[in-house]
Length: 257
Image 1 (cartoon, rainbow, N blue to C red):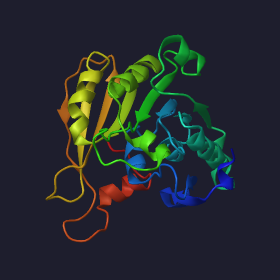
Image 2: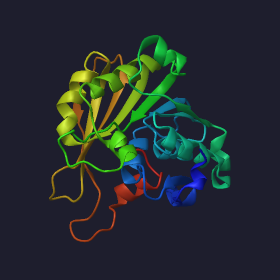
Image 3: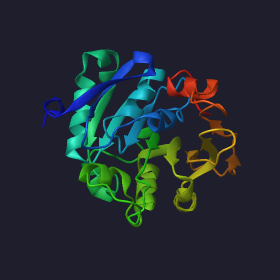
Image 4: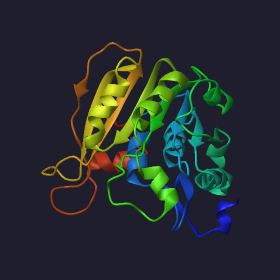
């Protein structure tokens, strides 16, 4: 399938430093969450990053936009969304990035030989980033099956995603996750014994409001303890404008940690 042949938009990120071809109606569309996730990768990173559940590739390409010596593998289960990722790499606006990225069509929950056969070998990556499905099956459902697949968490999924990240990331490599606060217990259980030195950043819409996301960064094999970092506040107390820190992260000018 050519994603260009279905209704789509071409959206600029990082103030036009890269673009994404995204579905206009059916399917998942990326935004600020993906830019925050990409910011878990440190500035100056020059290794290989796996964007697990990449969709059209927003987070992985955002890493490449900020880290000029990094490379990325965009891992996406849906053939529909994988086509958007491939077509995003083909955009002339992404000519400086596309040679450092490739798309693998695979289910993140694969294990053992099936995972390796799909192209996700053991200890092959320096960093993994993920925005796993975080809606419960009991949440209000969407009639769009592609969007539902990207958003709805099935039993044991968090454990399976973290298991895959622990298998493909080298010892000492990193993981970055963005999720809802309600997922924190499942995430910490899945990370235990695999990734340590965990740093958690709550993401608040405004200073006086509760967090709507959490971001977790960890190191494979680390025995360091957990730290709760200062919150990322997206908007000023009054008005909708980004705070200076949120604007820098959203536009690929700063790392989160």
